[in-house]
Amino acid sequence: MTEPPKNDTAKPEPEPKRFCGKPGRSGPPLGNANNLRHGLKAGKLPPGCQYIEIRMNLFRRELESAVIAVKGEISLVDAANIQTAMKWERHGALALRWLTKEADKLKPVERLTFSREVARASTERDKALSALALNRDVVSDAWSVLDATPNEENNDGN
Image (cartoon, rainbow, N blue to C red; front, side, top):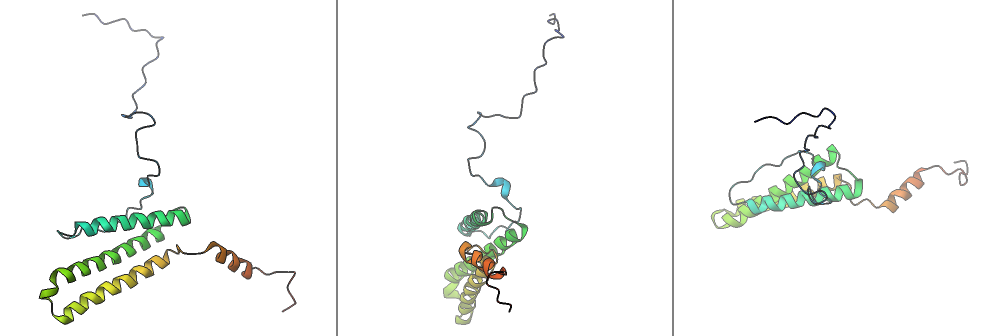
């Protein structure tokens, strides 16, 4: 077998890109926020609690979407508050699950303890959510800025 003669004037074939799909049809769907993830993890749950883990992932995604809608990005502090809110929500869900699953085996004081943990988890979750400042009203913030700005025209010397 003889090799074909090499043509020095021919352009070398470009390296194929690592693209394996159809242009415009491959890749993540529009609005995908994979690149916005912060890397904070919440951990795995015990066997039989998969539904809680799925619920928590939905909760986290909703919080992340809300923060992005209000602030445009998720800062490290926002990510930590999202994680805290998620952990407290998970704590409450687990306490409620164990309360309902083991209620007949628990003493009344233990039932109250689980119930108290469910309520406390809601309170702590709400604190983490309020730290995200998602319910700030733009109009009221504008008024607070106007009220804080000294007005030369209405200044009567006091």
